Amino acid sequence: MTAIRVGLGVDLHIRAEGKPLWLGGVEFPGEPGLAAHSDGDVICHALADALLGGAGLGDLGQHFPETDPQYEGMRGLDLLGQVVDLLGRHDSAALSCDMTFLGARPTLAPSRDRIRANVAWALGIEVDAVSVKATRPEGLGLSGDGAGCLAVALVRTGGE
Image 1 (spheres, rainbow, N blue to C red):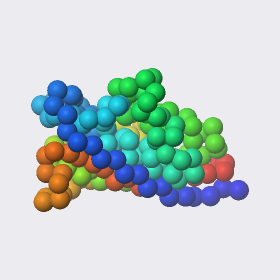
Image 2 (cartoon, helix red, strand yellow):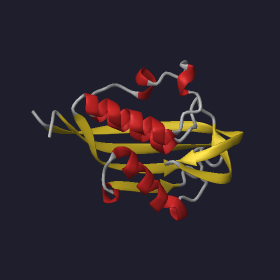
Image 3 (cartoon, rainbow, N blue to C red):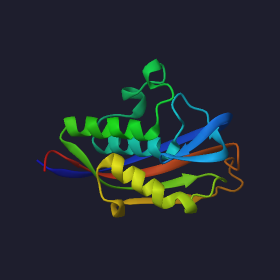
């Protein structure tokens, strides 16, 4: 029986000087990266968790443990691709997604279309099914020492 389910994902990391910043598969030169076992791409990671949740398949830590060296430095878009493959093996697929980046910097607006295109490509969906927004959580602790993302995904489970 086909069902449409919603998944929610959240990812937060502190900044890491000397590491590149990747968001939605786009590098932001000159910005400090995010401390993580992988590339720290909070947009891709939050979305991957939302997809797994929507499909009822657990979370990132369950499928991609940070103790496993094969995932060290893994790119966010590669991780999304593996999650899409996992969903497919469980007769599920992404239908749409909405992400909100939380951080004082960088400004996402100039890169929003590239991020949307990257995510759509990784999920195998149309660009107009991908939304990316940003907000500055002023005074809440993410004013430059960290960043995060909230993601919601609509997932079809149980066949076409």
